[in-house]
Image (tube, rainbow, N blue to C red; front, side, top):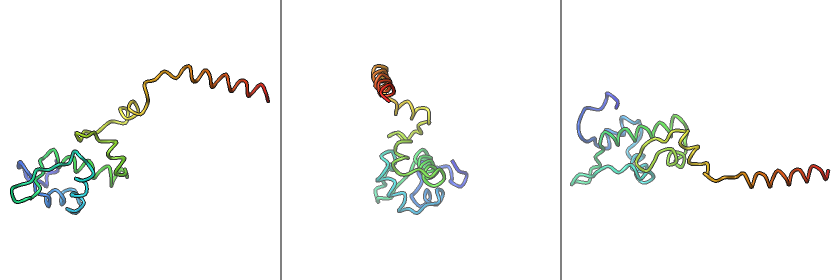
Length: 118
């Protein structure tokens, strides 16, 4: 957590926007795009972010602005609970756990037949 935020239970959207270096409208847009960003609202409708949500906002900002991810890329990189997925975990999620040996053997034999016919 950056030292510019005072230690308290909740932070108003303006405080979070200032720390993240974005406009409040950007934070409201991110709320609509990322299901893990759901600040509570006060009785007057003011958005109140917890410390963990401020950390998530800073992670999203880093991924979008510094690491040049797209919105979809951030969605894939962060779980629905807002935890960062490591690159190794992404690879295991993208790779199906199916045995492809039979398919590869069939392709190999087809390629051998093509090579022999040339």
